[in-house]
Length: 258
Image 1 (tube, rainbow, N blue to C red):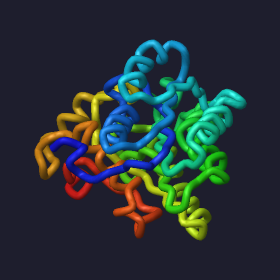
Image 2 (image 1 turned 180 degrees about the horizontal axis):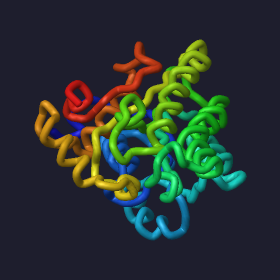
Image 3 (image 1 turned 60 degrees about the vertical axis):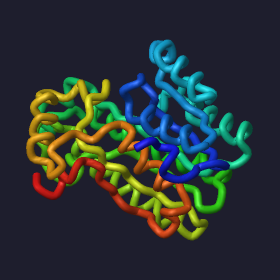
């Protein structure tokens, strides 16, 4: 199915944080949003990523900024640039997650305080910060989204430290939905099945995780980046105006049988 055959996002303006390359979830969301007519400001982590992402942003006719959410002032600069350029913000897609490999590959029991806090800051609290920075600039009915995973709800082998971090992220989504709902803002977590992204490659036994999902999912396959992007586009659209505070799975049904 071609994205442009779904519905229109013409007139919608948004920020997508976390492009890494053509295989990243953020890019999959950006491609679909662009095809449906949305205007966007994009970000990548650093100058190293910039060389891979700049041509992609050019194809999407979208400005691209470097934004390391750990560095003071960079997230503020990104959101202010978007607000200055577009006037209002209709959507935010937060696709940022990281943990130190030593902590990620070890037992959660043995995780360091510094590693745990760094993973929480980058992968979870940065979404709250981005939402707060966007708040003065949000259009009526705006939609804020972040990316989670099944390991937030279940103890998934080798997911380790990111499980508790993603669980906190999903809880954060519910609290933001309550706090921002009176102004008409909607907040969601999208929980894709395993997809071969650069970030996921840091997980141990990730190939086995993908194979298990492919074998056991009712649809007997992995989901694609366009399918993740299509769910994000639906949540941006006015068709989802009555929904907020949810974790929505796009995983071929794997979460119901795992």
